[in-house]
Amino acid sequence: MTSFALVAKATNIVDNIVVGDEPGMLVLAFPDHNVLEVTDETHVAYIGLAYDVTSGKFMQPQPFASWVWNKDLWKWEPPLEYPTDGKHYYWDEQTVTWVEFELPFAE
Image (cartoon, rainbow, N blue to C red):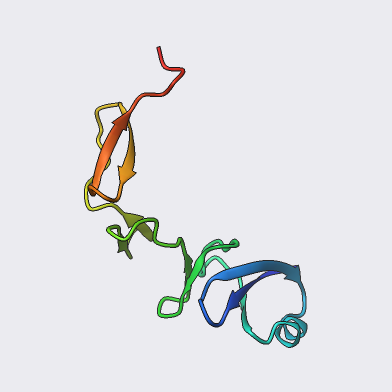
């Protein structure tokens, strides 16, 4: 059995994953979608991922406007590296910085 991603033609976003043997029936059933076979070359596909037509691979949607796509590592990267001081941080897009926070159960 083969996995196929149903990618909306209007958005290039994966709407569904179907497992089957015959992509032709999917093409007929979903005319507003591209039916793409999921392979090692395309990377893992799941609902909500974008499909990059240029590379032929699935990719995470951009989490924040300031983050940049790293094609070598195939992931989004923030403009500032995550701090390595062992503390907890979340990304604040308004200030374009990592903001420290404390876990409520931390001692």
